[in-house]
Length: 559
Image (cartoon, rainbow, N blue to C red; front, side, top):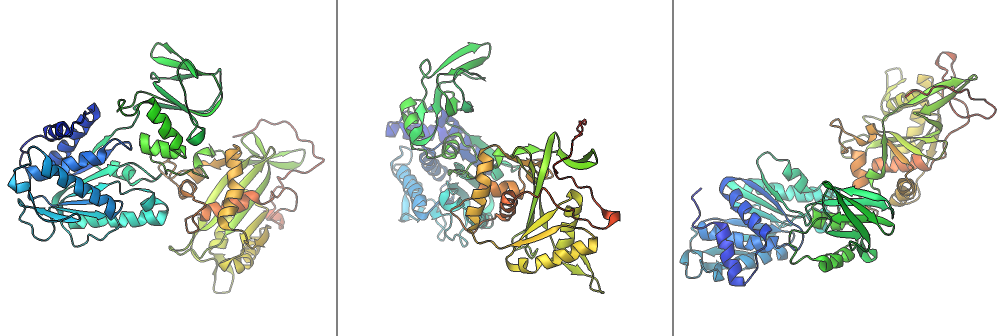
């Protein structure tokens, strides 16, 4: 690339002097980053907290690009057309008033208004020096040397999985309308757990600059007065709570701080549900204690605060079913015998009941998953989400002589046999009308005894899920086996985990099949007493459920 007529930092400083701005240090870092990306890179990601002038800097940057290379064609996309027009107007203003641009005929606008306009230095007659469009507007017939996405991820574009999928589809169009070696810049703050910025950061060829409001942070949940908490930085700002009940914590009044070596010991004067400690802000002149206390009070959720000021990938609304509240475990249940009685142990906890729910589906790729949830119940009320599986293929397969030999019901029999399940509840809707009969046939073919209980669903699905899961989650009674939470890479990225993260009770059309089967299994009364699921002597399985009148011998528990 041809070297610029002037550095972007010098161009920006001249504009700041013209506007009588005081330039904070982090703006200098942003200017250096943007120029380096544009001259030497291909894709850039710039993330700044809300209110830190990222859009204003972009206006000046666009003017600098046009000043140095007037033939450049810029496509700027924002959340909506109106948002994109703000950048278009801002760029025009800089070109018209910047000391280096005034009197320069090549950067003078020759035609066009807000959405699309040209400068004298361009030879293009079709696409425009700058085109400003909302991200959901069509740009299929356009071409560009420089593509910008400014805050395209917002609640308007990422409220549910379908909107996020639509956003990804629209963004993919940019790849095909770009000239070879075109530049692409992303600017914004995250608004979702699966933020597109998290995916962009993982690309191989990308320049990234992420600045948080506070470089260092420490969150203390269920903070207790008098307890000593250790942090590895000096706290400058501290807050308790969020929203209208939030409070700015003053050092020496609301907490004490003592330095010992390289760490600081914090002792709070009062109990707090949540207490956040931060280092100095990157723009301390503008965002002082009073300003941040006001913004903390106006944020309705911790997620909103964390995403908009600390750049954490979270939705700005509350997560009603936070999967991080699940307690992970990785032991398997073990059958034991004492005084002629079988019983089941999960680690050191005695399992007194087991519930299993199947929500049948056709197994087609576009349909809901045919999900099965298996929940274990111990003797003090904990619930263990032990398995969550998707049955695949046809509901039932028959051999030439009519015998059942496979299908989803056969896969379910494998689960019944492995965990000695005494009863299966089947949601009676759609194919659930005939699934119970098919399962009974498979159980007979496998010589297994297991109760089959078809139940219709009459209550709203979202209400069923919330009523069943929210209470155990916030009470610390909900456990989950690692096979439910983790993928093969060992990260919390399973479908079950994501469905909990993204669950929104206000949306009726969302991925929630695993949550629906789990909710049914959680509220179902645990099977404790009754006959086993096998009747033939060769296949007889031990009765592990609790029974009165049996004296249990002390044993060394196995894990």
